[in-house]
Image (cartoon, rainbow, N blue to C red; front, side):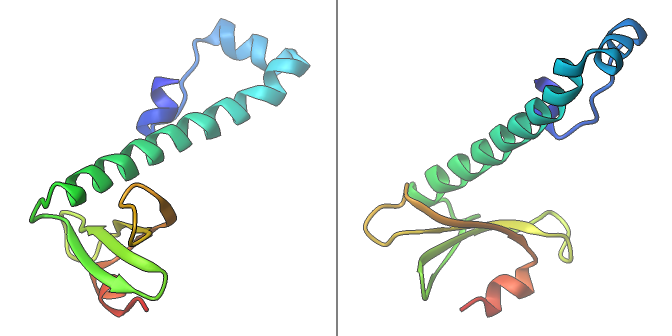
Length: 110
């Protein structure tokens, strides 16, 4: 779960890998668990961004777009994708859309 939540590769010991490879149930459900844990990481990042945006954190960029209010946390390097969350104007905690994009793409988002 920790590896999935942190976006790291799942590295199982040999005996566990052998079990997963031979067990129909585990081989079918392990990818689902990994995807679910990756979703937890994304949801945690989105929630932190919304909380910082609601608190007026100056590192969170904010602008009006067609769907509502876009909150954007730029990446540390200029060309790398940051995280944008579009929220309803009435509630900063109602996610309408979550997208990874560059600062230039954020600036041109409608």
